[in-house]
Image (tube, rainbow, N blue to C red; front, top):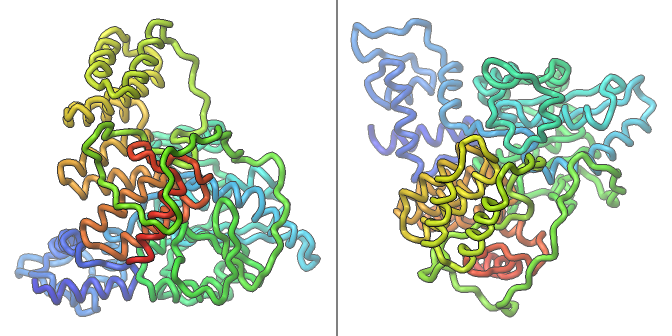
Length: 534
């Protein structure tokens, strides 16, 4: 295989899907291409490139042939399933969903109810790049909570380029991992146990239509199909993988597919730096919304939201202020002075909104946990480890899971600061056995991975933090620093922009980085300075 062949295949993927394949991704791409080449029994990747171009394949030996006639379209589907990211979960980015529930959908509904052109008011919602279906099903559940679906001519359509993801979406069956930010009450209401996990209520499943399409290559709008005259398009965490010119092309298609007063929501800061001439950006505290040819005044909020804002105490004041215009020095990832491993701070709680069960611990055991927290604040890490090891020795496995989780996370922080990396990783894994959605455990694992130079592992764990908590400012910031180390400056800039977009919404005095006692204002000034110099 020549570098030119690999480059040509990467460009072909970009032209076909819009996905940007960077040179630092070539080793991973090579592995996936080789997998397909060998599955087809081809001699080399040059032969596989010819297949993607529509030239019939030549087997590597007379003994090798294909069980079925070769199909270019089917092979592209196989390749797309390998190069696309199929990560999703229910009620992802609760702030944006709260905005939909309290402001955007009521506003769209009011316009439709005031129209006398149809027997039933109509609402058309499109989840573009829906992956395995959690996003459009989340829309259906949200609507079911606030309106009578039978009284509406409702269309919820989910589209994706990957047919394998759509097949899973149509099945309506999901594993526990898809519920990591989902209210247990709603889960009980809209799902029932299944041999492979959980299956969604049939009425909700029937309210969503799935369709395979290609955002870059397919024309929009498509009269006679579902994809025209749309009220709302959700296209979240899709453009982060797209080449810049592809984003601009898709935005034009979206504008033409929306109603004159329809709107688009994307992931945070995904459209920074792109031409938005056909949209008007309106900023809400929860997100930016892009309206087509509309200059609305902010509508009143609807009371009793399905996703109430958490109560946040007054944040502590920073002990160090940076004067405006003064650049913050680039902080080391781990300061030589302890503590090196501290919990990340986000704009909202790091655990799902659910009421923990009553504690079954004795008063003495609760006192031990409180003592361990105090020792950790005093940086007495050896005593923390000793105290918690004795604590675990006295516990029966059936006792309170929430307190066990807290103890493992305290132990992991203490062991990490003592340089006991393997023990700290094991404590994190023990915590994840109790709660697979522990943001702090993944954040600690990311720090431990980077400390030994495992940048790929660190990125995986930081992305897991972001999947669990889309408002995790420091996870975005730390991820951007890794991209800088890899000289992936475009991607670092995009992630920094997201971190900046999130941190500027916080009260200025909020402490976002306990390690360096950095406030939201400090981090915002630092990011603005960095981005102005890049």
